[in-house]
Structure formats: structure tokens, C-alpha cells
Image (cartoon, rainbow, N blue to C red):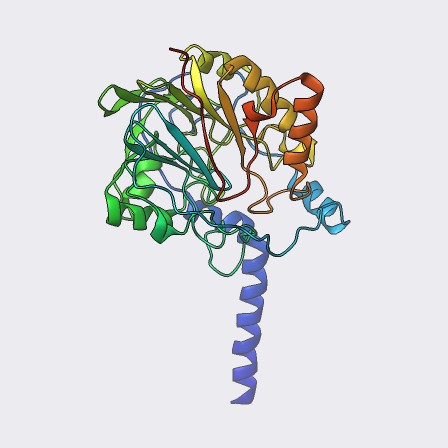
Length: 359
């Protein structure tokens, strides 16, 4: 009896060992998903999306990335940064524009009686799991319960730090906002009972009296589980408003910069929301994320009245120090003679007003 039990136990151990060896090739196919099917285009090959002129994104060398991590190349962040949370007004009417950085890529823009939210994440981790993954260092600058009724939500792509389904579910059940995203991402949300408008690049949808949202090209990629890579599209957005247009770059690398020139054609812009963080090591992250220097280049092309730097200091995704993006942005402003008020990187919970267009 004992011999039989030992054989069974040994067989189970052998099976587990073999399964672990082959997990990278056996498991991913079961995690693949089809989020979108449609006609072939310059950025969709019939199965996966791509950045025009660059082919399908396959990422950098993960072994090199983790070797550098093991060697201590990754900056040490504090466990928590104190945040002074704020309570926004219920509405901002007329041409006044109030902007609050809530954290990471989450921004609340209030203008024309509309409350607009970008890539909302209130979760403690940017991860498919509640117990592991990048943990929030800065608390949200606005408590979820203090958030005013949201009218419009922009979802740039399906990475966990930008498409946070628990937060989106809460917003949908509470406010029924108009959620706008790019192709395929609506499928992921619909599976959780969340409705969204999904558009291709250059597509548009009305957003209220005199207002419309355009889905714009940027340079990135998408995935929830690795093997579903690029099954859904990534994007930036332009919001056309009577009081001045808003550009939200989403999550993006610079690429060849042509997407920036395309976006600039929808200007002039009153506000640009641009990522400045999660960019080191540069050889690994360059195709994923712009750095502060590239963000300033984009700022100059778009030439907004004001810009807000986001995507830094909230979740440690890469190697740079927690406040390094903001410090570099300040140095670039000084070196290039850009007024401090024109391209800011505020603290979570800090709000500022954007000057209106000249009469």
C-alpha cells in the first residue's frame, strides 16, 4: 500500500515538474482572447493591431530587464508618499477649466458642465491579482466617494494600470458615464457588464452640446495576459469643446513622431495631458513610453495653453526614481525657456485652472 502511494506521489511530482517546464508554451494559448474582428488596415492585419511602419510590437528582452533589476539598477521608492486628498466641486460651468491629477494616468477635467475622467484606477495594485503586482505608492488624490458624477471616461488601452475593471465597474454602476475607447477594448469591459463606445483611429462620437471625442493614433501596444497581445487597439484622444480642445496622449512611445503631427491638426489645444514617467531603462522602454525630453518635444508640436505631466510617481513600473520625471521636466523647462505654468507636474490631489482662449 505504501509503495503504491509512493508511486502515485512520485508520478504527481513528475507531472508537476514537467508541467512547470512546459508552462510557458502550454498555458499562453489558453489565455489568448479574440477581442475584435474586422477589415484589414494599415494598423490591423486581420488578427492583431500594430503601429504603422513598425510592425507588430513584441517588447524588449525581459531577461535583460530582470537581470538589471537583480543587479540593483532599479531605484528604491518609498512605500508611501503622503497625499493631501481634495474634494472637487460637483460641476464647473462655462469656459472655466479645472484639472485635478488623481494619480498615474487618472485625471479629472471639469469644464462646460462636463466631468471627464482619463484611465481611472482606484485599485491598490495595477495587476490582475490583488496580492501581487505594482502597488500604489501615492493614494488617489480624490477619494472615490468624493468623486463627482462622471459624464465621460476615456480608456486608452487594456493594460492593467489604464483599464482597471474594478474601478470601471464602480463608475458604471454609480454614474453610467459615456466610456470611449479604441477597438476591442469594449469586449473586455462588456464581459464585466460595462458598456463602452469603441472606435478606430480617427473615429468620433458626440459628447454633449457642441462637444465631440476623437480617437487618435499613438504608439503603444496592448495585452491583458501576454498571448492576447495586440488583440485590442491603443489610442490617444482629442476632446473638442466650445471652450477649447483637450488632448490626452494615453500611454505612448514616440515612434517616428508622425502621430503627434496628426493630432496637432485638431488643435489649437487648451490642455494637453502627456505622460512623462516609466521610461527607464531606456533601451527597453523606448518603444513603450516617452520620457520627459520627448514629452517636451510633443508639447512644442501641440503648443497647448497648458500641459499636465502624468504617469509617474504612483506605481513603480520601471527603474527611475519616484520624482525623477518631475525633476527632469523642471530642468527641461528651465533650459528651454518654457514658463513653469505651461507644463506642470503637480502633486496627486492638486488642482489647477487652465486659462481660457483669448477673446
